[in-house]
Image (cartoon, rainbow, N blue to C red; front, side):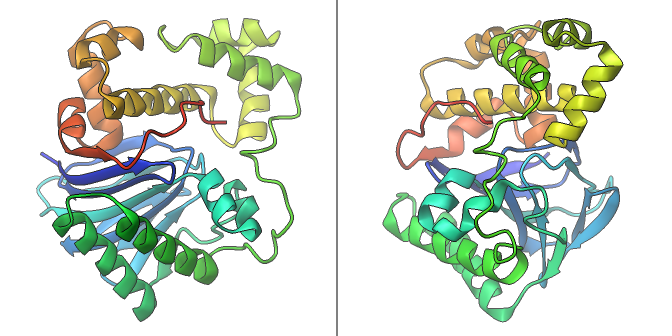
Length: 288
């Protein structure tokens, strides 16, 4: 079973060391998502319908809202993964030229070869997580230097300079906006494509086409992301127990919520709460 070794969360998003020995289902994040092997066996992630290797000399780079999965093979040894889930707004505030970091093509290639400099910065970040229990300026400085190096080396920030990101620009089609609004208002219910389509004034098939074109993701997967981010935020804040969060998000039983969380995150909600450390309370606004 996969284990979370360390998770830190704040305005920057999340940084985690995950000891992974089980697959993750097709999922997405509203973050710039970077995966770097810290130790253990080589492994693979599936992005853009292809398997991409995660080795000592590679990184897997996933754009905001881009579907992907962890293709761990049954019986294969585990891999300790440095997983970065970085908020686009934090990147844009850190450096104005990174404003387009939530555009679909920000990372043009899903797998890139690490430079020695980025490898050293990733190792430093992993060491900070493992051996420095108090999240503070050292951690955030290490994260900032690592992300700047990754973006400078592997992203299209230069050609996208000046473009407003999808995180700042809502979908132009009011019907897609209506669908998003309805989903955010009904996180406590099971996803129902027909009801979402009616709320948007569309047929089910038309909703799927418009939503996929506008948001680069299916409505059902978008809804799961909203649910997952809500659960992660609630677990980190600590005001509710797992059963209460499960009920709030409309799961029929806590065991269903636990399975959903583990399939998307790799660990159970209880373990996530046990290891997460908040640098400061993140803003509670939902992802775009």
